[in-house]
Image 1: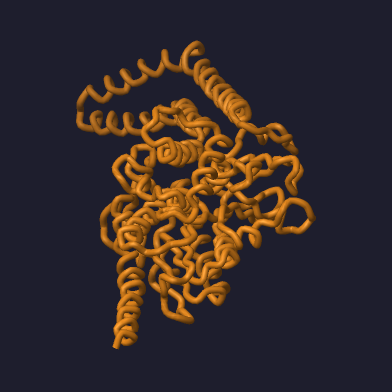
Image 2 (image 1 turned 120 degrees about the vertical axis):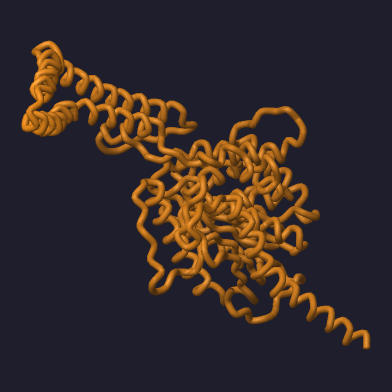
Length: 474
């Protein structure tokens, strides 16, 4: 927590921002539950990464969808929110089969290195069993290595497995293209399209949109609509109820890989709406970056949520088509998450009139000497380490350079968190010598929110306000 220029006050316009990736959202859920139970007044909610999910639900009084039984973080799909794309999973098995086939001659050699010493020991002991043992071994190998057996079938099996791998890549690339709602012309060699991005975020996106739709539809048995219809219904609900208890203004930030800039999407009340989102016309760079979700033509909520859940560099970016009358003239851009865009989210909160900001992050403070952790060998572990490191640095930089924009900046973050962003089934903690689960991470967020913000900041502010009121009465 930075040193505030003034004490916390519920009378000030307050923003609650969530930042993180993957499993970090469980910590967000716990912190939000604590803030909601304590009745902390929030005017604006914003998020990036998995924090966009928390912000989207909190804006329409749906934060309980994160932590309640059957909610987002208490359901079966969270175990595989991110997984290797199926061609990569199948290629792993094919590679294992190819290695096993090619290793058959080496296995025979190793077996010979075991059989002959045993036969030698038996022969030196005066037993005939050694000779019989060797003859049995040779009688087994002779037909196996005949011209019509292993020398023929090993190359055939290897060729068959290699062909299956090539077909898997081709089918995977074609299905990815065919299932995509939008397409763009690709540059470069076509062979690279066979590989594609290694990690699939489809289940995470589907689970997020289903959770939002479950909140919107209530008890009606209606299947989840397409992205544009869902976005319009969400924007209408928020716009019609803005200012009502439980409903809050919304800010979301993602990165545009084609425009090389961060984009902000939001729905805020006047007069901040006019300042954040310029009217149509003109050529200001602000029109290229800021998009009003309350506009009928800007049905982007579902697409922005999907982009926020797309991991940079390892997931396919979300293709989003802008309106023909917008700044981008109907272009289709690739949107994705970027850990460092937290700074942009904080800037937008200040532009939306926030006087104090509460930031919830699942990454602990940067480590000091003698706090090295063993590097992860698995693919998900390596990606998670990079994301966690980038988010920790981005949070520190953003707070250091932008805290002067507010009367107070308050951080809710764990002192220790062994769960990396992609450890969706939990993670082993060397310090406590046990596996910690997402359920524990959620409870830690709840406890940290009380210990770091509600009791020392909100509670102390309430005591001071009560004392001032008594002094006035006297």
